[in-house]
Image (cartoon, rainbow, N blue to C red; front, side):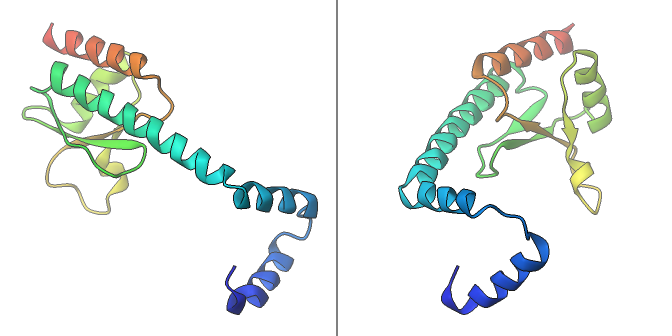
Length: 143
């Protein structure tokens, strides 16, 4: 915490978190100071980048006629734009029938998006699982 903000942060901590263990605070501070947190962040970022690329490749290979996707720095989700005649609801219903959880982008917008899109999360899934699910979805759509 910058020197100028120590008093403000101390007051906020006092009123919001009276029972924080000093031992845990010291352990966390050492974890950060010794570079373990930065190493963890690099490892997670690398894994997420790899998973994102696997998902993009699978979508481009198996669902390019349904979804338009491009790499982003959006963290652990991809925005996939639906191609006509797909709507968010139609696509989500189709995915739900296969036990695939997909969120509509409109859920996160104040105004209705100009183009239908869905949000795919990839952090909690193994690359092989994502490819298999994209293949299943593609086969189901092509029936």
